[in-house]
Amino acid sequence: MKTLLEMFLIFARIGGFTFGGGYAMLPMLQREVVENKKWATQEELMDYYAIGQCTPGVIAVNTATFIGYKLKGIPGAIFATAGVVTPSVIIVGIIAMFISNFQDYEIVQHAFAGIRAAVVALIANSVIKLSKKSVVDIASFIIFLVVAVLSFTTDLSPIIFILAAGICGLVISIVKESYGGNKKTKEEKK
Amino acid sequence: MAVFSLLLEMLFRFFFVGLFSVGGGLATLPFLTDMGEATGWFTSMDISNMIAISESTPGPLGINMATYIGYRVAADYGMGFGILGSVVATVGLVTPSVIVILIISRVLMKFRNSKIVEYAFYGLRAASVGLITAACLGVAKIAYYNSEMISETGNFFMAIDYKSIILSVLVFIGVTRFKKLHPILFIVIAAAAGIIFQM
Image (cartoon, rainbow over all chains, first blue to last red; front, side, top):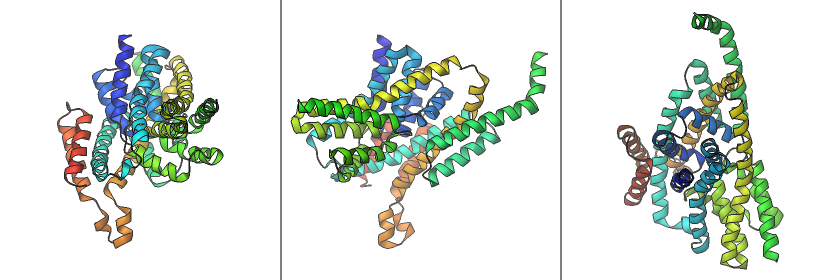
């Protein structure tokens, strides 16, 4: 029960300070879930993001569900998901109730111009951390570069990139295995 | 009783949005537009207001939109129903993805040690970093570049937001130098800087 509550609170903190959608949640997830709590590794986080992008629903929710389930089964999934969702429900609920032109306030606009600039830097830092584990050789660097450029410049769905990259990963690994892998396995046997 | 059938309808409609919108909060947009047209609950003007609010409140975009619509639609019957509506819409949106992820988690745990999964993820991880990089560039474009300014003046350099670029660089230096500091701290400082320097 203690872990479930802790999970709810930590995911609530993540949800409460994520501005601009699921990608902006990444720096917070790395800090809380990977570095502080060690509930998941960088690689696992990356896997969850990859799957979250090609399954239905909000990426933040998908990632929370994954981590919650991994730690504490179905109750864990529910607590983590409820945690990530609760702050936005409360904040947006209050705004919907009392403020009809929230975004027109000048002070709000200035604050968010600042936050956007910070979010760019925070996500860039996350990308650098993640790329150390995910962009490991020339082939994966090419996959990374092609996806980054095409995704930024076109409106193609992330599903296409994820599926294509999965197939590429499969083919490249099998090719590598049949060329260089044999020697390695022989050496390992010795 | 009308309000309960309304809430039930909302639950189902948001469930379907959650089931079919793949790839994050913005992917819910076309489905929401359809929903507005089919039910008359909100107009496309309302949707653009919601996007503006969602972008300037914390939390996932899809969730914010569901909460906002849920409240606005059910609040006709009173504030209590409005709150109930926001919860119902959010639960509807979230439920399908929780179910799908639970199924995938089970399958993954079974096949975690399979070579095929390992090979596929070699490509998937690189692509995932690529998608995140593209998202980062997208935010950077909005933060650094004022497209209205360039149509007014035609001068590219006038449209660049130098204050934002400087702030980003400072935050980046801060976050790489002082690794112990929490990301939340940088967000709070940046919000204050935005207000003080009229960004």
